[in-house]
View 1 (tube, one colour):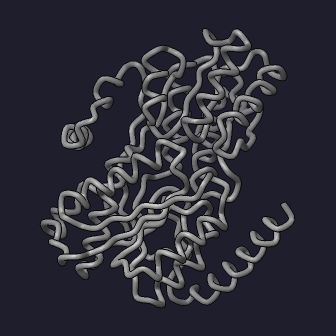
View 2 (cartoon, rainbow, N blue to C red):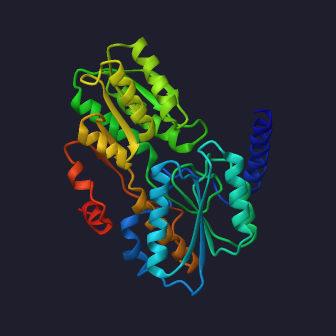
Length: 348
């Protein structure tokens, strides 16, 4: 543990130094509010057909972990485009979502392997900053892809994180008109997406004047930690109305706690990501809903953006990808695995 903390402090110090060096060149990125942005659906209309990559082009991807279905699905999106265009694509990830130094080591190894571009989904906002600087020095474009935000990133692809929480809060406002007590199970501290999702939910539901957020605790993206946190909260607040969890794995842990407490009929539970287990839990009536950010589509869009950057196109700093609140009322519309059909549904 001491070794990990020393390493984490070293990363933070280096991040601060690099960030100060970059400050004159580029303002720290806030992907939700960055004005230099466009919607994913506008890419072809504004920049034309996807440029054909040169023969032998290699693109690398670095993800948080492959133990979470969301990140596997994101990688599948990358691979879909790579297969279509004959690219060589390498996708690697840390052992778990807390292995910040391991992920940095993977990223630095890829930089030395001759990739034309790199797609980074960092563990936290800080841990891959040294790799971004090395890639920039080597002339390799780096695209920051959901969901942690690298402050010095020149280009980002992902959904509006704060809107995740806003959508769930609005569901409670619309469907629980009498209000009540609610709780948030947060993701990993220090991750932009976790903070924004929590803020979106808390600010929106507080503004209604009918709800009280009685607990907001981190569970570090862990289903087990979420189960334990939710169990404690349910003991403290037996009249709780519902939970919002920052991802689906944690939401499914909350579902287990709610069922164990005998509260399944009265406590609503929402997650974020749209993984297949969440869809199954919604269909079975265990999970109330999720905010699907469509990781396969996000991966496809991100690879398309990387190819456009390699071709020298002057893209905005942020390309925003879609999301939708999924409940039993609309699950059939979005449960398709046909990516072309999904794109069509999202463009309606």
